[in-house]
Length: 354
Ligand SMILES: *Cc1c(COP(=O)(O)O)cnc(C)c1O
Image (cartoon, rainbow, N blue to C red; front, side, top):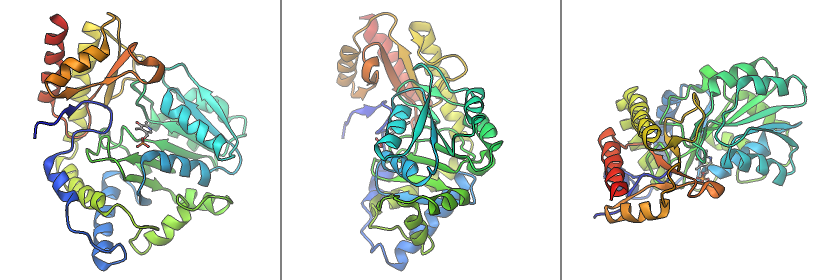
């Protein structure tokens, strides 16, 4: 009953009604019932993500679809923008899969500026650009809309976006911005357990995949498309996740724009608290709306703080990798409410005062 309330950037707290939806009795993945379920959740996702393009469901964590992006969409060379652990991982995936790529690297804590991307694309060397919208390791949110404006100037350059920890916390306008691949897992702002990823693929991206050999089997976008046309997935999906996603999407659409305002308000609360008591790790103007990375300017023990929080059934996140103890992170995503964030911050205040 009294489980630990997670304020970490995934997995996040899942509402009981969504946990219950996961317990819906199974249906066959080639049945009419499944096709109806698939069509239903697909329509909701298309509306939510403002897209008329394809929305596919992958039974994997987000990393699977990230790797799929690198396998399906690179014909020439990818420009991977990197500003932290997850974007660097995506760059690495290109190389591991034998896809040529260059890194457009900025220091951790800094954001990717559209002009930097423009400068690189001018060389004409690249066929794809990879951007992590919300770099969860540093709490930096990149201006995807503005970067997309730049990419649009170049014919035949595809834009791939890892929106893993941003989608469903900030409004993502897939068609309006012009994203060719946009992906996210369920355990971040969707507020569901890990195990399923949602991704949009443009018609242009499908055309590209058709020209790329060696796409692999499990994440072959053309296989996704083939089964999508029958309202199915290529292999047996995690049906419990799809039941829960369908239910959660109804609630997300009902919440409407208030969902994004709620995330913005929670972010502001944590950012103000961080600036007052510590310092923000993300550079000004690039602060994430879904997770705040705080520089540990007063040298507290983050591990001890988390042990103390555990006694109150709460958990925050230490810094990522080398940033451990130098920073710590508070996630404010999914169905978290403002009052919970206020409660958490005053709890931390009271622990640190002792
Ligand atoms: C969590 C996260 C990932 C990896 O997700 P997995 O579900 O662990 O595969 C990738 N990118 C970003 C930005 C993330 O926050």
